[in-house]
Image 1 (cartoon, rainbow, N blue to C red):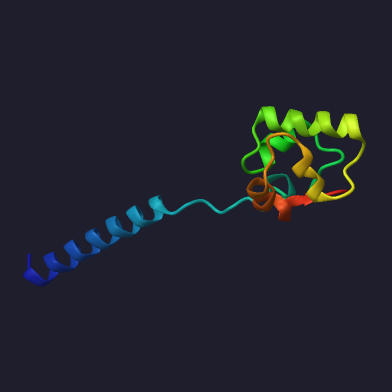
Image 2: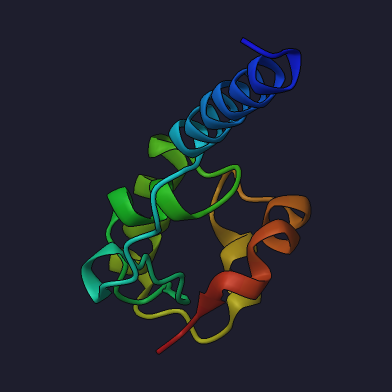
Amino acid sequence: MSKAFLSAVAFALLTSVSLSGHAATQTPPVDASPSAVVETGMINLNSADAETLTRELIGIGATKARAIVQYRDAHGPFTSVDELLEVKGIGAATLEKNRGKLSLN
Protein backbone atom coordinates (compact mmCIF):
# COMPACT_ATOMS: atom_id res chain seq x y z
CA MET A 1 0.00 0.00 0.00
CA SER A 2 1.12 3.45 -0.70
CA LYS A 3 2.14 5.90 1.97
CA ALA A 4 -0.47 8.42 0.75
CA PHE A 5 -3.28 5.86 1.06
CA LEU A 6 -2.25 4.91 4.63
CA SER A 7 -2.05 8.57 5.59
CA ALA A 8 -5.54 9.21 4.19
CA VAL A 9 -7.00 6.22 6.07
CA ALA A 10 -5.30 7.26 9.31
CA PHE A 11 -6.59 10.81 8.89
CA ALA A 12 -10.13 9.57 8.23
CA LEU A 13 -10.09 7.31 11.33
CA LEU A 14 -8.69 10.00 13.60
CA THR A 15 -11.22 12.53 12.35
CA SER A 16 -14.17 10.19 12.93
CA VAL A 17 -12.97 9.33 16.44
CA SER A 18 -12.51 13.01 17.22
CA LEU A 19 -15.98 13.94 15.96
CA SER A 20 -17.75 11.10 17.78
CA GLY A 21 -15.94 12.01 20.99
CA HIS A 22 -17.03 15.63 20.59
CA ALA A 23 -20.64 14.62 19.96
CA ALA A 24 -20.66 12.43 23.08
CA THR A 25 -19.60 15.34 25.30
CA GLN A 26 -22.21 17.81 24.13
CA THR A 27 -25.02 18.54 26.59
CA PRO A 28 -28.55 17.65 25.57
CA PRO A 29 -30.87 20.52 24.66
CA VAL A 30 -32.63 22.26 27.53
CA ASP A 31 -36.28 21.41 28.00
CA ALA A 32 -38.09 24.70 27.50
CA SER A 33 -41.53 23.35 28.36
CA PRO A 34 -43.47 25.37 30.94
CA SER A 35 -43.10 22.62 33.54
CA ALA A 36 -39.31 22.86 33.35
CA VAL A 37 -39.19 26.65 33.72
CA VAL A 38 -38.82 27.83 37.30
CA GLU A 39 -40.46 31.16 37.84
CA THR A 40 -38.78 33.51 40.30
CA GLY A 41 -41.48 35.85 41.44
CA MET A 42 -42.01 38.13 44.37
CA ILE A 43 -42.58 36.74 47.84
CA ASN A 44 -45.77 38.05 49.40
CA LEU A 45 -45.08 38.77 53.07
CA ASN A 46 -48.80 38.65 53.81
CA SER A 47 -49.47 35.19 52.42
CA ALA A 48 -46.21 33.22 52.23
CA ASP A 49 -45.87 30.31 54.63
CA ALA A 50 -42.75 29.66 56.72
CA GLU A 51 -41.47 27.01 54.30
CA THR A 52 -41.63 29.42 51.36
CA LEU A 53 -39.93 32.18 53.32
CA THR A 54 -37.13 29.81 54.35
CA ARG A 55 -36.62 28.53 50.81
CA GLU A 56 -36.81 31.83 48.94
CA LEU A 57 -35.22 34.43 51.19
CA ILE A 58 -31.53 34.95 51.92
CA GLY A 59 -30.57 34.67 55.57
CA ILE A 60 -34.00 33.46 56.66
CA GLY A 61 -33.94 30.05 58.30
CA ALA A 62 -36.85 28.09 59.70
CA THR A 63 -36.84 29.93 63.05
CA LYS A 64 -36.91 33.42 61.51
CA ALA A 65 -39.52 32.34 58.98
CA ARG A 66 -41.79 31.10 61.78
CA ALA A 67 -41.22 34.40 63.61
CA ILE A 68 -42.35 36.32 60.51
CA VAL A 69 -45.54 34.25 60.27
CA GLN A 70 -46.20 34.60 64.02
CA TYR A 71 -45.69 38.37 63.83
CA ARG A 72 -48.14 38.56 60.93
CA ASP A 73 -50.69 36.44 62.82
CA ALA A 74 -50.36 38.63 65.94
CA HIS A 75 -50.25 42.06 64.27
CA GLY A 76 -52.18 41.60 61.05
CA PRO A 77 -50.90 42.00 57.51
CA PHE A 78 -47.68 43.87 56.86
CA THR A 79 -48.35 47.40 55.65
CA SER A 80 -44.74 48.03 54.61
CA VAL A 81 -41.76 45.85 53.75
CA ASP A 82 -39.83 47.89 56.33
CA GLU A 83 -42.17 46.57 59.02
CA LEU A 84 -40.23 43.31 58.71
CA LEU A 85 -37.62 45.01 60.93
CA GLU A 86 -40.09 44.68 63.82
CA VAL A 87 -39.72 40.89 63.71
CA LYS A 88 -37.19 39.66 66.26
CA GLY A 89 -34.03 38.45 64.51
CA ILE A 90 -34.57 40.41 61.28
CA GLY A 91 -32.08 43.23 60.84
CA ALA A 92 -31.48 45.89 58.24
CA ALA A 93 -28.86 43.80 56.41
CA THR A 94 -31.23 40.86 56.00
CA LEU A 95 -34.02 43.16 54.84
CA GLU A 96 -31.77 44.80 52.25
CA LYS A 97 -30.61 41.43 50.88
CA ASN A 98 -34.23 40.48 50.26
CA ARG A 99 -35.96 43.80 49.57
CA GLY A 100 -36.14 43.20 45.82
CA LYS A 101 -38.00 39.90 46.31
CA LEU A 102 -40.59 41.13 48.83
CA SER A 103 -44.09 42.34 48.11
CA LEU A 104 -47.21 42.98 50.15
CA ASN A 105 -49.83 41.73 47.70
